[in-house]
Structures are given as C-alpha cells and as structure tokens.
Length: 447
Image 1: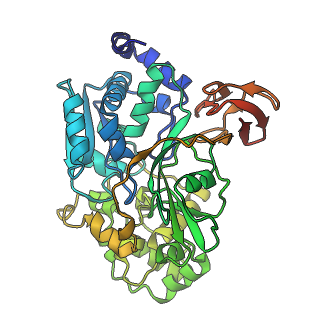
Image 2 (image 1 turned 180 degrees about the horizontal axis):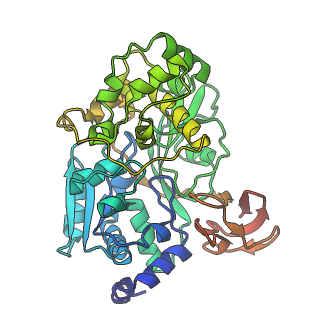
Image 3 (image 1 turned 120 degrees about the vertical axis):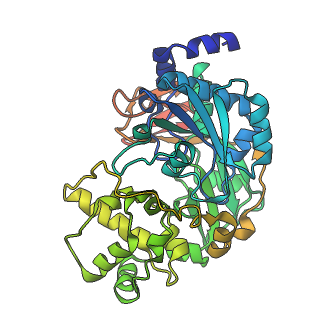
C-alpha cells in the first residue's frame, strides 16, 4: 500500500482497528492485551513506551534506532484509532542514537519525545503515565483513567505492518548472558528457545545453566528448551545455575515463608523504595511480610496489594536480608482474588515528595544483581536460515484461546491465518510455510 493510501486509511478508526485485529496484534511488551480492543477507546494521549523497563534488554532501543518511521506510522495509526490528539514517545535520555533517529523522522507537531533518566522500573506503565501527564492511575484502574493509552514501540511496529496487511509472524528477542554471540535476534513466532540459544552460540550442553524468559527481575526461569517464542517474549537470558539471581528465583516457597517469619525485622525499606507506593497507591510489602509471618488470614487495607506490579525492587534490591517480599505480595494477591475480593478503583494518598529520590539507577541495580558484565551494547541479527519447525500456542495473549482454522495434515503458507479469536484475544498466523499438526493448545508447523 502506498504511503498516501496508508495515511488515508489511518483517518478511518474502524478500518484501522479491523486491520490491527486481522493481523493478530497483541501487546508486545507486557501481558499481550489484544491491541484492537485496547485502542477502541477515547483517549487524550497515546504514549509509545520505548523506555525498555528491564536491564540487559535492547530490543526496543535498537528498534527505535533502526525503524523510527515505522514506529511513528504505528503511533499515528494508534492515535487515530483511540481518537487521541497527542502522541508521546517515551525513552531514556541515554538512548542518543534512538533520540536522533526519532527526531529526524518526526514531522507532526502533535508527536513529541519525553526523555527519562536511566532508572528501574522506568518502563512501568503507571510510572510512564505519571511522568508524562502528572496523573496517577488508580488501583484497579487503567491508563485510560488518566486519559492515556500506552503501547510498546514493538507493538506500534506491528500496527504499522498491519496497515499493509502484514500479520504478526516475527519477533525480536534479546538473547544475552552466557552466550558467545549476544544480540537481538529476529525469529519466527513459535521457534523454540533452544534454537535461539543455538543461534547466539550458547552452551552446547545446558547442564549447569538455567534460562530466564523475559528480563532479569520480572522474568521467569525455565528448563524447557522446546518452549516457543511467543508474541510477548522479549528476552532470553542464560546464566549458570549457581548465579545468585537464579538461586533467588528458584528458591523454594517454603524456605521464603520461613525466612519471612524468622528474619523480617519490619525495617520497611521495601515499602520505602516501592515505586507504586511512591505514587500514593499504598503498596506496603513490609506489612504483607508481617501478615505472612503471623499467619494472618484477614488483612487491613488490602486494596494496595492489587497495585503491586511485581517489579521486584523490594526483593532484588531493597531487602538487606535477601527476603522475597514481592513473592509474598503475589501470594496474597492470588489469595484475595480466590476469595472473591476485587480491587476498588481508588488512589489512597498523595504522590510522595520523595518520588524522584527513590528511583534506582540501572547501573547500580545490575551490580547488585551480579549481571553488570552482561550489560553491553548489542546488534540486530538476522533470522537463521535453518528454521524448519515452529510451535504456535493458541493463547499468546490475555483472554480466550484462538480456535484453529486448519486441521492436521494441511499445508499452509507463511502469513496465513490459521486460528481465530472472536472474543477477547488475537488471531494466530503461520510464521513459516509447511505442514501442520493441530493439538489442543497449539499448532505445530513442519517446514
């Protein structure tokens, strides 16, 4: 489609949303909320999140450096879909190449850059909303309550592709840690984690190593190298299993509970450094630690628990005793939901006057985690030519699984729609050509 036709199409909200839906676009930087549903709203500002929250990840930075026009095209389309008059691209002020590239590509007066310091969690959605607008998203609320919609820059690239009827079939993933060729690799959705590690020349024998899917703080540990890359996969980090970060992430829950009962001294440093608490949302991990230690079943002022974003500052940085307040927060949150308790839309207090002083510098955080040696500049790497098999989950998004349109034995082409979701969800497209095998929760394609 010609550029002039693209801009004309962007003026039609219904057409933009339909193209996004057909392309199977879901949030690339978070939980995978279906983008056509998220943008079907009335907002004042669309915020493009390029702050790349987690240390070590380089995907969004390199995307902004190399594809600024694509990001801005996606942002303009998102603004049209959401009825927003203003677009703001948020990134860190140390991303000098990305800043220069975006400034050269921006031609509209209503699109601006917002620069942030290099702190964690700069990419937190609610932190970004507050930094840009000065408004706080309430507990139980959405950025839309502050007149905003937040989209990751990778998602905006997918939106730009959707305008040209190109579906989501590829994913940029940072692969780093104990590998010889760390880089940001472009891979077909559904390729195995093991294939990514091999492309980065990781250990040929993974005995003695563990894999973190995502970032070092909010990511999860897996030993399943057949696990597929999904639309939301941002990073693959390989560390030795003796690394303190791996030890912390894989520690038995029973031990964490014992430590909470016997060691927590209620210093409240976890609460002091909590970024969501600083926004006035009354997220108080030290009180949850005390409740867990006492075995309390009923808790006072629990609403703030629902505002915990599981950033891990309390666990991986604040606590001097290596306790796991964030894990206790998640346990309590799950228990509350199981008991039928839901968050009330509410802002408990005022933004802390100390909010800027508690921001944790990324350089200090990586040293504390023992991962500073992996904090390095990376390059974009092309997709390896020897990818002949993928495994596409039918649920790579928030909501319901997609329904298969193909049956075992069918031959499909790359980009073909192979599963649909009529409700809250996203369509799935073949990322390579080949013969399919349909299972209950995924579709395999052999090239």
